[in-house]
Length: 131
Length: 310
Image (cartoon, rainbow over all chains, first blue to last red; front, side):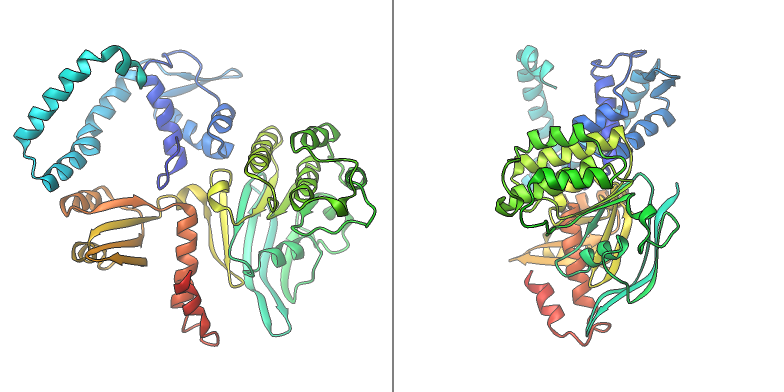
């Protein structure tokens, strides 16, 4: 689950963000604690704390005194906006680079994209819940 | 955060060998450190000097602000699990644990018993007759159950199988989370411990060559892979620590985090970027240090060859 070459605390923060985006962690519910994250990912608790603190600084989580961390209202929309903005950089650029190497142009990609999207639509029930 | 250990210009010389060469560093309270480096780099020497089991040739060591030598108040707050700990000939594991229980004020008998169970240590066999892994288990149990304010583990996993090592790592994290304390873990299995350690100290030939937050090091280097001439064009002006090639394809490890514009440029040039694990980074930097220190360590002509072979 953890990949090399990227700061661990960022990956921990992203894993919490992913749960918020896919709604498995709803707004105003309690987020996993630093110690739970550390135990689950088998990482140093200080590193997990750094990830959680980053989410607090970003306004994604907030602290309820004596209880723990909770997901801030509006967090999901803000995360969605942020991820959509990063989508092209993160996914399209590598796609275009590989396509160029294989001699596939934008039209080929567009056709492939539509084919795949249609196929995925058919299998929505299984595919949709997988991630 | 306060420093529990302060080392200044520590030097240890054995006859004509300089084992530790003017080393200075500090250890922060309640932090897990990885003390990493090749065999003979000086790790065990440093740990035995810090725990007053060996003398420094020169330099200063302060533990909790005091000198550790013959200082019982300091020594009972530290636990050093040696790779090759000696026990009395007829001792059973329970004798070793009994002694530890007397010596360490924070000893937790329940934790010790749980670990004996987890690691399936035969309690009725003399320590002398234990396997290498079982002997390591004795050390691991003492190290964890002593709950000392500073615990040194010197390659505690020798002979332990993967399951037992995972038990050790899990129990260490669990107990550290419940009762934060300072842990210094010396290991060759860098990939196994890289997620546990908050800070990394790398010793190479008696010198500290890395003293940083582990997380800060994770994106410190990258492998650039692709057409050799394109790779060369990209890495020009960057610090290259390793290079391999196969036909027209080159794989070059460069230091320095890649910026977003670097990544765009790499994509445009059709080059691939592969992450470098902490283990690879340390292997490459110690190799690299061996390769370029030719001027500094000219008395050792085998150094560069050795680096290139590994």
